[in-house]
Length: 106
Ligand SMILES: Cc1cc2nc3c(=O)[nH]c(=O)nc-3n(C[C@H](O)[C@H](O)[C@H](O)COP(=O)(O)OP(=O)(O)OC[C@H]3O[C@@H](n4cnc5c(N)ncnc54)[C@H](O)[C@@H]3O)c2cc1C
Image 1 (tube, rainbow, N blue to C red):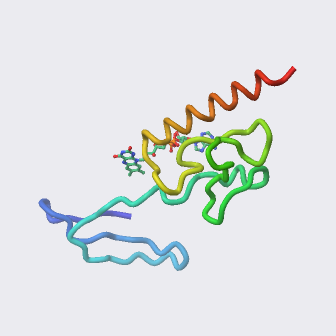
Image 2: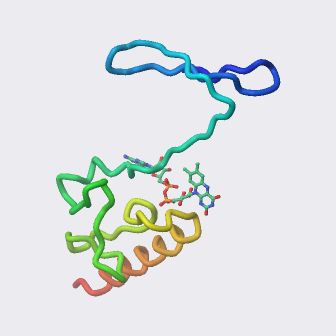
């Protein structure tokens, strides 16, 4: 809800328990954002094969998914590296695989 400080350093964090709606103050001397650990792939769960955490499964070494003509790149399929440069690389792989897929069709 709020990061509280004394004007110089963090002193506590106000948190909301979403189950009980109770607000609590947690004494703290630092605040670190830890986001991006669960991929935002729920919209694909009825169409593509995902792993237990929600990462889209690809055929190793390719950007191919379990559905022909659907390719994946970036963090949505990468639970190991999750970096901008690796996302760009696998995004490029997905673009090339998509282009080749389209070129192979009549
Ligand atoms: C806090 C933090 C710090 C990081 N620091 C670094 C760093 O220092 N160096 C580094 O290399 N990497 C860093 N990363 C990782 C890097 O940001 C990611 O690896 C990279 O952005 C992944 O790119 P992406 O295109 O796969 O996904 P994203 O950049 O997450 O792009 C996905 C896009 O899809 C959009 N989207 C989601 N759902 C939908 C929808 N339903 N419809 C349409 N659009 C949708 C999102 O809005 C977003 O724009 C950091 C990540 C975090 C969270």
